[in-house]
Every structure is written in structure tokens, then in C-alpha cells.
Image (cartoon, rainbow, N blue to C red):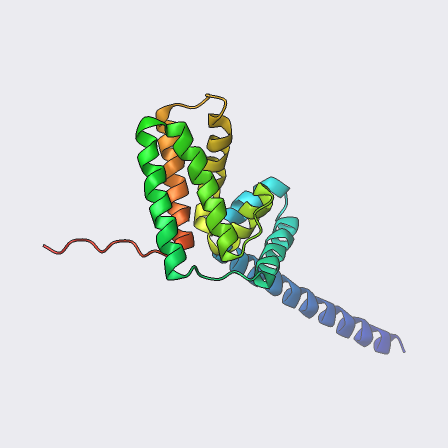
Length: 185
């Protein structure tokens, strides 16, 4: 009888070890997948939440949320209109960097709204953008913070210029405008 209990115990232990190994492999695979998909935003979220498990849960929830949204590309006329508005915003920088940065912040939000992103809350907007534009979201947060702080006159021209550059990168990505080809020599 004691041998039967020993065999049963060994089998149960072996099954538990195999289950633990499978679970560990699944977690490692999920971590690699999320880290690859979200890039620097993965590290940002882990740092913000303090632990990997809640951060991964948050990132997976973001991806699921964005999948349910009706995000769509812009039509050609919408894209042209936004490009014209961006050119106007950029020209405003010369005379009023503050105005240009605040306009750029609003213009990025307008492009997002037109594409189908909810835009009422900035943090939710940044979280949603992080799903499809993870390499740009950190700079988007910085640019938005600059737009908010700029209104108090706390930023210099260089910081405002950098904010406009960050807004432009996300703006172009949202418009799905290809970068110009380098000139052939």
C-alpha cells in the first residue's frame, strides 16, 4: 500500500511540475509578445504600475479595448485637409511658438477623433495610441505636457520646438503619410 501512495505522490508531483513549467513558458511567451508589441511603452507601464503582472494585464486590456474601437484610415480629402492645417500650425511657430504647440495638440486630437479614437480624456487617448503607435506615445505624453505647461509661460522656444517635433511624428503616423524618399544622386 505504501508503494501505491508513493507512486501516486510521484505522479501528482510530476504533473504539478509539468503544469508549472507550461504555465511559466506561457508567461514568458506573453511577456515577450507584449514587450515586443509595446516596445518602450512596456517598460513605461511596468515602471508606472510597479510590477510586471499588473502592467501586462493593463497592456493586454488596452489592446483588447482598441480592437473593439472602429479605428479607420482617413479618406484622401480628410488627409489633405489635415496636412493643410498642419502646415498652417507650423507656420504659426515662427511668430507664436506657444500658439503652434497648443494648436498641434488639438490637431493631433482631432485626427485621432476623425480616425475613430475616443479623445475625451488625455490619459485614455495616450493609452489607446500606445497600442498602434508604441514608439511615439512617450514623446506624445511629453509634447502634451509641454502644451499644457506652455500656457503658463514656463517653457522656452527650444522646448516648444521639441514638442512640435513630437506632435508632428505622431501626426504623420496617424495620417499614415509615408516619409519622403531620399533624393537619388
